[in-house]
Length: 87
Image (cartoon, rainbow, N blue to C red; front, side, top):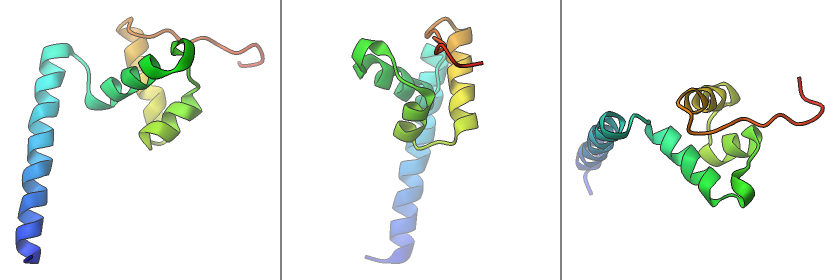
């Protein structure tokens, strides 16, 4: 397969994902990473996970995951529960 054709197909896929992501954001008020976070929480035991587990699952850096969690908490979709020794 021609390299140019492969790149064009990848670009079409990326564009389709971007368009779908914008539609989900508009309809439901959440981004794709937020949806993935909520799905992971939904499938977790007692709907509880650490931010480290979430970071590893989403393959994102800690500050990005922290922002996702803060936005979901601000929307009332999740609640953070502090561990006893945490600040």
